[in-house]
Image (cartoon, rainbow, N blue to C red; front, side):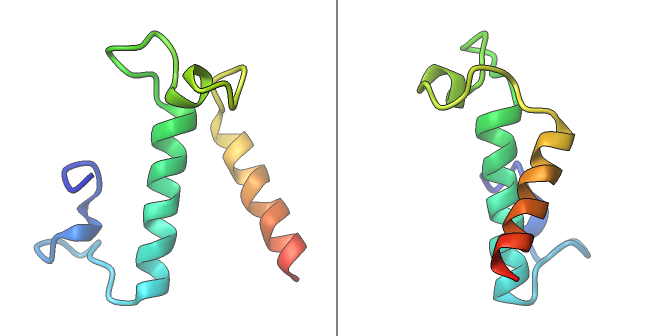
Length: 74
């Protein structure tokens, strides 16, 4: 996790100073890790292996999910 995102280290400009920004970055990282990234040990994503998804998500799928979440909260 720490090596996957630089938000955990203070050595870069990407370091999160606000908790809300840090939480959002962690959520996006885990969404990408589980639904979009095909792993070396598996020929599929972890979400597909767990039966949560039938396909690899694209970037537009993630954007649509974020927009739906924002519209639902408003």
